[in-house]
Length: 353
Image 1 (tube, one colour):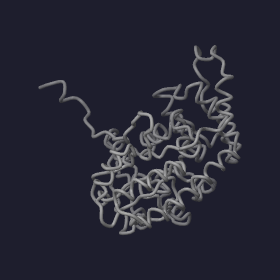
Image 2 (spheres, rainbow, N blue to C red):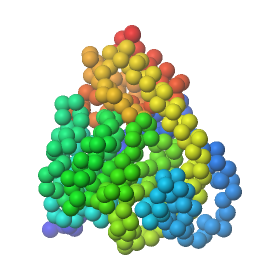
Image 3 (tube, rainbow, N blue to C red):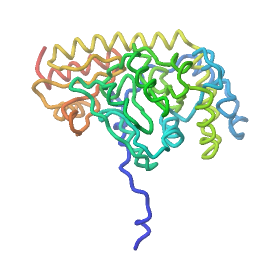
Image 4 (cartoon, one colour):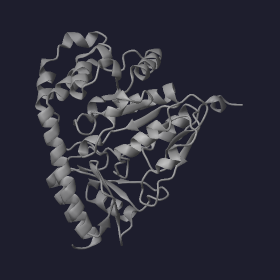
């Protein structure tokens, strides 16, 4: 008998590589290629060092909460803020998926879901996407202990129609449905208005993508006041101070600059549309994306070979050696200059257009 026999063992989430060398083109973790809103840098210079020695405000009482509530037209009692959407989702797993019945999520999706389920000993079932990588509504209208899926899905970038999202929520009134909208700002339609009609719907979003603040770790959830109260009860049982002073201040500054936020989203959408044409000309196929990435497969050159040769050129994209997706690459949309460098490298690897 060893102490290791009493250790909880799980297979952890594997994040994308984080190279820090100068000149690297990093298109593998879906970060925004543009800096945060100018007001964020300004607020950084104004922050009071004295505040660093004090515990921060509770997030729901902060300026950030007020700015987010105003931006989305909701009451603060419908809003939960956490240390990145991963923290929010992890707490949601602990809070809402406790029936003992299996939680449903897609077989090809954000790979943290099964990690959390294993960690918290929550039974789950992966529902296969169809041949076109789409979620099948009928798979989620069976008895379950909860439902979670991203919309648009990751890593495919495919958006589920709002009517289909509502069908899933309406069919599961006795369970909580979590819609992970990390990528909704790049052309999708949010299901947020549905929280007025369905008290079992939790909508989760993040500052890591469209608001250019992955390094600050800000995520938030919106839902019925009852859902938010239950989330807060669990949070305050684990860690009352999940959000630091700087994140609360700088997040509020980011939300205030709506014009800059929209401008960045529009630039990424425009670059994504050009990338789809360029990649198609190079022999790639991919589902239509409404995220800040493209999920692409080449007709002749294996994805793993492209991934490795791009790395040799200091260009990083995401590759998974997993069933059904082992010949696909997830390519984050970078700046126009970064994408041009990618196209030139792919010409050398895959052949000319």
